[in-house]
Length: 231
Image (cartoon, rainbow, N blue to C red; front, side, top):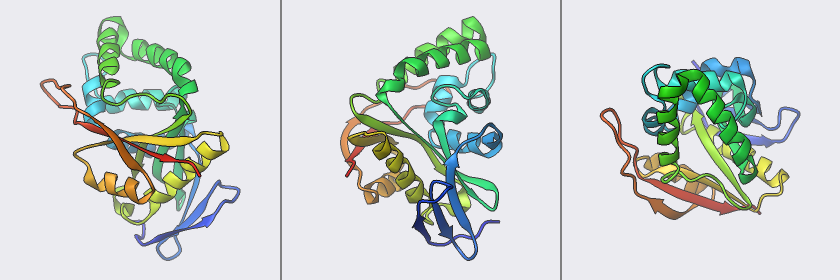
């Protein structure tokens, strides 16, 4: 069991950021690796299970986590390990998140189409792609100089201890290094705890999109777009 406590960021280091979370526990942030999948994929799924299930739980290929696992290990696209950062404590992944700009849209679309058709086959894959495009009406892809944060999650025993805020700070630093002018994310209207964290990190709600997306198993909640300028 990891020790819970207030996390204080100590500053950048070779690990791209190191912090403390409780007595003797260090959390460091680094680019993800394929071998992080065992912990990282369930965390990615937990960041938006309703939307993931709406799009990816279908027919051949099984459930959404199975597809996310396939994509993470594959490495390419929005869900690949190359697009993610992880927080590590005691040699265990305890947090995950992604950050990317509008310039990734083309290559992410190509990667997603390849991964979906390979994983689900043509018949089921076409339906998955259609549902994915529908979700973009609620959770919009980045545009302009925006750096978009996604898939933010922390293991349950360290939630509320500052790890999430430190992860956001690391991703914002990446946006700054990339020359972005603003950072954005989407939060489910049904998740006030996450929204409160993002507000404390300097984000403000700029719009809300209503969702009519649902099937027999799940409903995609309304989502709020939050943004902050990069200083």
